[in-house]
Amino acid sequence: MTFPELTDLDLNAGGRSEQALRFRRQWALLTEADPVLAGWNTRHLPGGRLLAWHPEARVEFQEADGRVVAVMGLFLRPGGQPDYPFPEDILSKPERLAEHCLYATGAWAVLIVDQGSVNLFGDACGQVGLYYKGERVASSPLLIPGVERDVELDAEYPLGPRSTWYPAPLTPYRGVQVLLPNHLLSLPDGRLRRFWPTEPARDRAYPALLQEMRERLELSFSALLRAGPLSISITGGYDSRVNLSLARSVLDRVNFFTVRSPEVARCDLRAPEQLARRLGLTHRFLEQQPVPDAVYALYDELCGYSSVGDRRAIIGTLLPLLRKEQTLHLNGHLGAITTCYLWPEPRPREFDLAQFRARLPGSARVTAALGDWADTVAHHSVGHRWDLLYLEQNGGRWGSVGDLAAALFHENVSLFNDRYLLHRIFCVSARKRYRSRRLNRDLVKSLFPEAASVGYCVDTMRLKRLLPRKLVPALKVLASPFR
Image: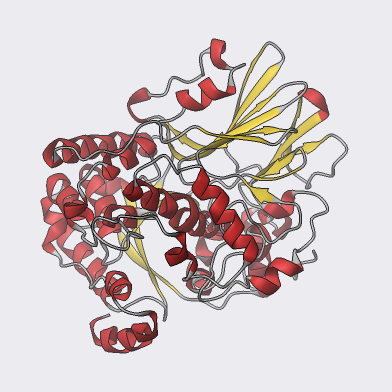
């Protein structure tokens, strides 16, 4: 693809070029005969393979007995666990290595490459997408050579207001699939095995769970601080307030920001302003700016033309970040998991995928993909299945594509993307979780009570789930004075 010159942004003055921003922070496992983007790092791997990565991508290697393990992305080890470098006796056993990495947090993927095979797995929600075709694997679908758009899928499942993501393993490219989260994939045979959850979700005493979650979040946040300069986006919502509370002892070391654009509710602008004033935060509003066509082209190519709607509409606020290197951004993605987000009722008696499919355009391939996925969780409780549906096929897939596109501007991470934390959330009783933000509020009060001194915005997402779909537009009109 040819891009227009970035004349509206003087990127070259900072040593950057349009070429240097293509597929920023991404990587691809290719064959040695495949072309590689100019300026990228490479390493030859067993079996005639080649790993290529953008200069700003995080990649670490471990090698033993002719086998290479590559860890890509932000692999955080709260409290020093899991052990890394990995114990050498498990490098030849992909299932054991996946189990060893269960409680790493962050946004990451692991490749295990030997002479005859590639094994791969990743973080809890698939925030680092693992796109594959044949024996090639990449963090962005358009890094796989020779891909073609799947026009038949586009026709039956067009991206739009009702469908802002593709359920896994579907992608809009022929023959390209994305790995289901919490699965281990072996190539070239295509064998797929689920390795998490490893235990059922059973209700436990709330005070003990709250304490364990608080301690885990604090350990994860400490690990994140060690990874590089940190920015936290804040709004009037509950999830970003948890992130703010985790930073209570390092407020002077964190940059806080809020996006200001027509798509952002007024309450989500007022609350951060009040928080910054009361707590003495280093905070700024990122204003919407005109977006050069070249930036749209970079953004769309990076995510495979799959990030649509408000996420794409606000990228004009992020333009200053094009000039920065290794800017970590802590966001609140997946925080809705604390509310039993997709559950149809407080104690669901059945797992009926038809209720979820009704939210999406009719598509036989989507129905088949979701049905195949449901078979992998059939042995879990009904409530647990609804939670995993949100994690792996709804919030996780939507967030993965959005974070991939946003990698053009900063490196994204959510501390909710953590199997240790998620299991404890699943063990909180539905009475405390269902359509409630109690867990988030209690975490804020226990971490940083002063952060609760500013009110939260109206949870219109919760209200929309209580209404018939045809009444949602009316809700938006009624809620506008409060937004």
